[in-house]
Amino acid sequence: MKRTLGVCYYPEHWPQEDWAQDAVRMAAAGITWVRIGEFAWSRLEPQAGAFDFDWLDLAIETLAQAGLKIVLGTPSATPPRWMLDRFPDMLALDAAGQPRKFGSRRHYCHSHAGYRQAAAQMATVLGKRYGRDPRVAAWQIDNEYGCHDTVLNYSDAARHAFRDWLAQHYQSVGALNRAWGNVFWSMEYDDFDQIDLPNLTVTQANPAHEMAFRRFASDQVVDWNAAQVAALRPLTDAPLIHNYMGRVLEFDHFAVARDLDVASWDSYPIGFLSDRLEGDAAHKAQYLQQGDPDMQAFHHDLYRAMNKGRWWVMEQQPGPVNWAPYNPAPLPGMVRLWSWEAFAHGAEVVSYFRWRQAPFAQEQMHAGLMRPDDQPAAGLGEAAAVAEELRQMPDVAPVQAPVALVFDYASDWAWKVLPQGADFDYFRLVFDAYKALRRQGLSVDILPPDATGDDLAGYKAVFAPGLATLSAPLLDALATTQIPCLIGPRSNLMTSELSTALPLGPNLPDLDIAVTRVESLPPATMRPVAGGGAVLHWVETLEGSAPAVITGEDGEKLLVTNGTLHYLAGWPDTALWDRLVDLICADIARSRLPDGLRLRDTATHRFAFNYAPEAQDWDGQTIPAAGVAWWPLSADSRTG
Image (tube, rainbow, N blue to C red; front, side, top):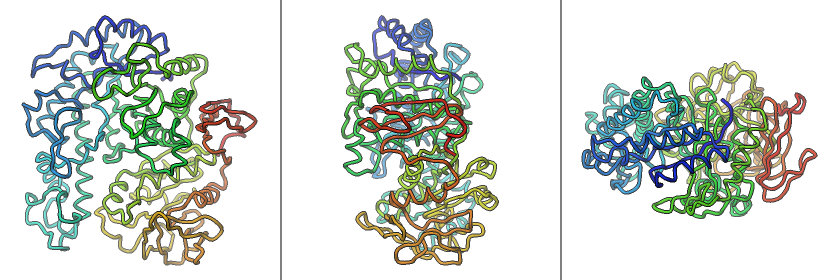
């Protein structure tokens, strides 16, 4: 598919006499795709069973006449008020038992059978009307699963569904008691109906109980999505998409993706820097108007790992947002940079949120490509510039990166349940590894936790930090691969039920080592490492015959190896991460980059992105602040 631009549009927000002019201006700006309908249930079905499609028919016709292709959303993220009268118990409850009331969005429980069926029925109605309409060229299922902390919920519907899930998973309550270790604190059950949700306990609930609940909650999202997919599949040949988010990890996106055709995500770089990323004040000040140099790329690579590499940006930040603690405007050039960075990582479509800034309701402070007074906003010119550059440049094909990074949603759940340190966070650990690779100019692919030997083929290095429990396929791959692999810290130390692995982990093939003690370190504490660098947050004591490659200044083993497979027993600081990349990637061509400069190689081109607020000189070029450069890539200049 040729790379194109899109925009999110809400015809129900604007007078019908404005639609045609909006459509013409979109097309003139180089936009091809328009996403509509994902929040419009109250206008599609004003009362139960009374549908109004006239306005949507006209909107689709108007947009299509301007040459635009439609992404039609199913509106299940915003059930109308009458739906709550029909299903008073459909509301999600938070961990304190308080209802997530009507008055915004996502106020439903994924486990509620009645609302799940109603959402699937709406998808069916839409599919019957528009599924074979060639103007509707793609579908979005729901919107932003997990937004506003809506995966884990504690309603009666969730309680009953959880008990059913447990009965199917464990078959007998005795098996559950043994798996969870319920002899501890007399937590044994006689019947599945005695098992409650793991909230409002006096102190921490049983970790195995919490982990089971998180697995269940993820499965509920998968099943919720699958119900609408099942409704639409027979009615359309257009691709089915969901728009994931940044650093939302409460459900397994790989599992949801198995039912879809295209992965997409919503990219808000400046909002994420303020709202979702660790970092000192200097770092956040340096990238205040650009976003972190690696956050967007990480998610591009993550979502490219799904659906055979087909992915979009469904919502791209075009200006200040409304939802972060602070909301500065992008540095001039950043909308163009973010767009090209997505294309360099393989995106088919970059779609901006939104066409016109709303003058009312919750998102009225969220910028669009047009201002609320219908004048162009700053982002429109940059989007139009990208469209023109796309017309002039041939498509750039993705290519396998030299390095793979394994990512596992269940490991995030495990370490949230058993952090053992207030700042131990799985995403943060994996993101540190990703940043270390990118600082040396390396392109990175992300692999799922059940990666096989075939999946590892062609890579020159593999990094897999923090995997709570290694999958059987990945263990088999590690037993046979000759690729340098870095595992750990805190990898394969637990069973899937969050009990301590025995024999003591990490139990890696042909690597005689065991973790006999773990320590979590407060933020101001660092353990120096012989040769440079330090460990922070987390450190393990190792016993066994595997030789040490790196030790602490106290002589304790920190990195051990059998020649190919390496186990790391601590959380590195920046200097130590750089040493580790030098070691594991010794046979890969790479370049230390200036702060804020990042590269991405494709099959034919190298792209450079300057996130810094000042110009950067690199490889004979001066790349301006918020600048993008690309050039044909010769075989001898490719990293790796």
